[in-house]
Length: 401
Image 1 (cartoon, one colour):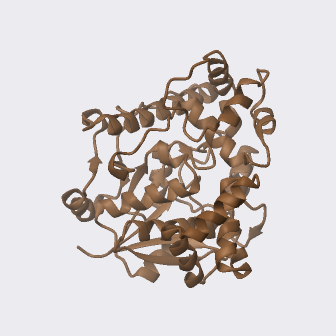
Image 2: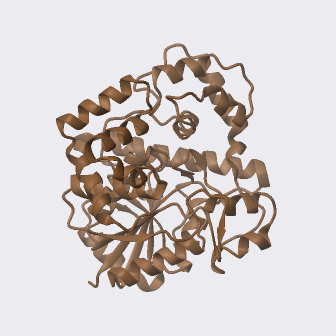
């Protein structure tokens, strides 16, 4: 089979920057095929996606990708470290990618690789430095960044603080830990920065585009979206749409004194105590502000709240396996050769028809149950907003274009 380049993405929504990234991934790798591992209905920032996963997957295929697989919600809503590792592990397990393409603010892959080697191997001095910064009261991401600087020097400060660089380092670290033969392809981000409010020519950040769409400025938003991006209407899900359901989850949490083990994923004892002391009901923003501290970042809080809403718990992975299956979301009709190669060579399950899938053990069944529940809750949010009933997980069909 001809070579393939893989991408890990959210496409929330698929915009001109993503189209540029895909074009560069193909150009720099020379790959004939491209596929993506994409977040489903809930994303890494700890929020519901703007559009449901099938709509976003269709946009990605219409804009040039061959196949879209779903990253299980347990990992799509996880920390950058777990999000990146799970995505890379899935791609490695599919046995079809020759390249992994990702963006970064820097074009110096030597520096990114130096950091990733440090994180993959974790020397004794690095671990000691990390523990010292944690004892000082730093959050884990901050403590780890400071430990990297202690080891590599201040020249690396910009490399480890910019958001796309952080994910790029995590991807490289995962490739090293997995001893993967997949070659990294670095694409320098040269337009609107991640989550910025700035515009650069035909490029705007996904956050800014979402805000335009939320405000009803569809014509303005369309300037930064390829014409093939799907369903530019007013039927979007916002972060604060989870307010009522989140309050209900928090009420249930407060009235359950002995939470069954294992605990909610990423929830510390400190955060658990703070959640129990909230005076409800509160708005989504009020909940976030009430919980934020120096040690608890807003992104961490939002992820824990989503895990509480979806009842995602800290389940151990057997034998270090993160992603035991890949759910197919969308594909191009003329990509059958790539799909056949994946199906023949993959060392994890490929889920084509969800209703027929039988998990092989309790861990797989738990992950799959999380995915089904996430779709049900997302569909409920959509129904509350629009009155439209979307298909549930088991009755939804793969998008073929």
